[in-house]
Image (tube, rainbow, N blue to C red):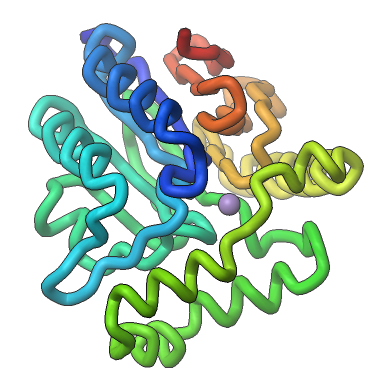
Length: 242
Ligand SMILES: [Mn+2]
């Protein structure tokens, strides 16, 4: 294990992405202790996830199990994205990681971090903020829980998004990525004790020291060339797993 080296992965969209992406992620998680000593999953690893009170989805079970296995060796944080926010208490209580549907802050890998997926900060396409409010509503989540899981997942698949959106609309993604970085820079200015703000969502990789000693990191998407980021005391760097 490399001490105080944080590995960051986001936007694998497992379930919507090809199975080969999950196979690669499993191999990456197996080797992860050679790359660092802590892991941050920055949202939308699953597309999609919903924890019921007594059930979890069978799809991408291998990755959930691999995260649980790795959690016995190193601290792991996971924030929900707009496709996997509904983790309930499963990740903390049964997997042994630290999970929050929206954001986490604290010390990980030797740095003060704020991790937030980044949806809902901006209107990246029509209906995005409306969707953010709807899918974060406790009433909607409570009602959804009463649907049979097979029906619930069928509905979620119907609402599933187009993974090629970013390729088709690079200008929209660029604008959204710029808004994310502006938000991160403003937050770092307000909170000088923070060493980094980490986001995902736009699939737009960034490792920028936006203020002295303060970094904005978006690892890019695992589904887009198996991207990940490393964050150490020296700073952040972008990588691709092969
Ligand atoms: Mn997202």
